[in-house]
Image 1 (tube, rainbow, N blue to C red):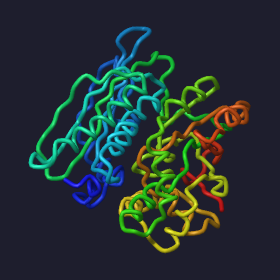
Image 2: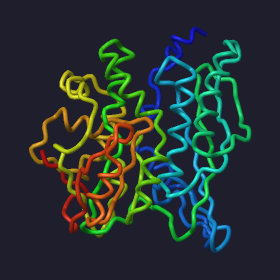
Image 3: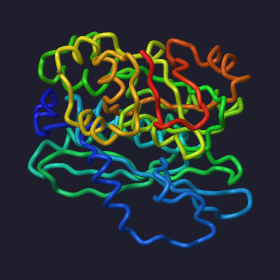
Image 4: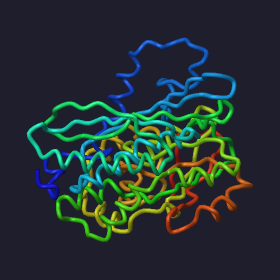
Length: 343
């Protein structure tokens, strides 16, 4: 396999390859519920990982994620896929402990390419402070890679995705537009500069943003991946409140606006729009900005719901070249729609 053509085997890669949220929701609804008092967070809440209490002081977080490549360099693909899988532990408020490789790879291709994928993944597990313990592989014509990850958290410090409080500010810790940029770059329609911006964000662990955020009053947290900014923000809403977004404050890779204007979009983004059509209200938001907000992200940033009195201080700590961030909105009294986006 020519390592410069790794993603030639895939029609779509990264979190763009996720199943549509509507289909997934219907499928999960048929799984029987498990009534175990130690299961603190299960699949029924659309959260980032499962949490099971072992004692009064320790709960384990379990999560997994894997996908086809969205880049041609196998080493870089391994790093991005691992970073994405590790992110759910931070989104739940925990620390990474162990990880297992999940590998799909053609048995008649160059094993050196697989070795590079695994090397990239292992380096990110080590950077996260975890231990890579093994894994499982199958023969598949389409390469895929990811991790099953176990972390720990105190049962009283779990970060659920929908425990926001009215008045909270919503902070985003990575720019959007990754899905459109990587897909367009593959087709020769996006610049090297934009591609490199996307790559930098995708391989940056959310560990660093969460370690800073944990010093402040954070009420809720999730990460932005295949369901896009609006899809994951929607999962932060419950029946008690809505979230208002000022789209003018949202960070995105600058070229993403041009790509959206020229309808260089992804199927995943359109699936997200369809699923959210009756949950989001746009008020004077240009179409390119709407598409950026629906765009599937691979290894995206965190969405943090922070006490309003802590928001400015947290932004000041987070705002570095390595952790670009923005205050995108606030939690309000319940309105007709889950999310209201202003232009």
